[in-house]
Image (cartoon, rainbow, N blue to C red):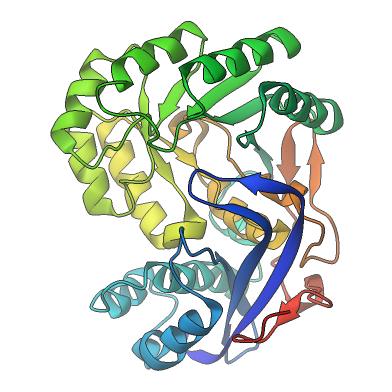
Length: 366
């Protein structure tokens, strides 16, 4: 199956509320949509999240990379062969987001060629439990946010953005425990806010608050530091920022990692799959992490999450950020009931998309 045509479209969507990330404050999301089509007109899609401090590319930069560097690598490549696509892109340095988008779109295209959505093509499940991310706010606002998502959608799993100081993080976690049902589950992501000297005490704090996983409590680029921390830690350390390739995964797994974050929106389904395979070999678990996806990106990336066995999941997929966006590239809303999203029975196609009022051309600020 050869590539017949491709396109790259861009859109921006305002947020309902200002988001305070660890490295940025923003009021809207900017996205790229890659479409790969075969000779029969069947298509695969991938969404990229464009943030200076996350992906490090602008729309114009990404467009140039696809046109001048990445897409020429697919000339003559059989898109049904996942390894051939990977090897065609491997010689290109950097361009992590673009290469990941190509691999993801090719995965969906392979399923579409069999007239199936990817989750069914991969023998996955239709209902995917999801988690809500509580971004940095006052403790009262974070608890209010959690209660609202639990009440409206039945969400019982929460990724809590820590890093507001030991005292504030402790107050947030205790308040959540008091306000929500006892069966609710929590992961805390400090986004490497604390120092390596502070990390042991912070891990004890999280364990005392019944947190299941501590994500990036401090910078973890040092394998020896991670190994020492995990050996002494009362709970598993979930590695995110420092684990973006199968090579990274191998290093951490050999050092005793018990949980790795995989983000198809950041690294593509191909690299996420390779990390997942390595984790399974070591008996470790994975999460499908947030990358600030729109509803479209959520639908795409949950297709891959659906093929992951329950025994390999450390925590439900963090794919609910779209609920905080004022618009959607999808014509119909995702079905989120009792804390789970139900995936459609057919492959995504152009009839499902609605970019009216959201799309823009690279280089044009609207």
